[in-house]
Every structure is written in structure tokens, then in C-alpha cells.
Amino acid sequence: MNPDVVCATPEMSIGETPPLLLDRDVFDAPVVDEHGRMVGVISQTALVRHVKAPTTAAQSGHFFTEFDAYRELGNIRTEETQTPVEQVMRRKMHPVTRETGV
Image (tube, rainbow, N blue to C red; front, side, top):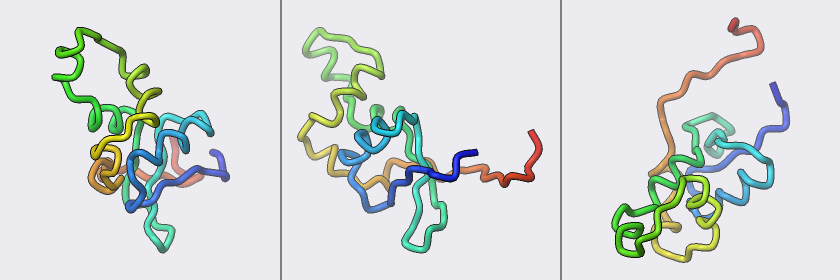
């Protein structure tokens, strides 16, 4: 368990989150409210699914992996990247404590 956890906020745009995750080399992060309570989880996969439109690949004839699309997400300046994390995050969580068994 890492005590130095990278967190997102519900108000952050999804365009702000890739650098946050990439800088820390993590695939997802908890989303916390103004009181520090966990309200969801944002993942690389959720970000890519939101921004990547199926017609984009078909129109360009270029097909890419989710990882490739994720790497480019920080450079895309479209309205989709202004979407709040709150609209894309996963709300169903299974929080655990240090005492939780595996």
C-alpha cells in the first residue's frame, strides 16, 4: 500500500488527468471530493473510451491500441477533453483498509 497516492478531483477536466497518471506511472487514480472522501476512480481506459470516437479510426484508416490513443490524449484539444472527470469516473468502488484480507 502506497501512502503517497495521486488523486484527481471530480471538477478536473479529463484533459488534465493523463499527465497526472503518466507522471506517476499509474493506470488509475482515486477521485476525491473537497473533504478528501473517495467518490470514484478514473482510469486510463475510461479516458480513452471517452475521447476516442470509433468513426475517427474508420475515417482516417488508422487503427490504434488504447495505449497509443491514451498517449495522444494530452495533445488533443477538443471539447471532449474539457469533460469533467466526474462524468467519466467509475463510481462503483471496493475500498479496503490495511487490515482487509486478500
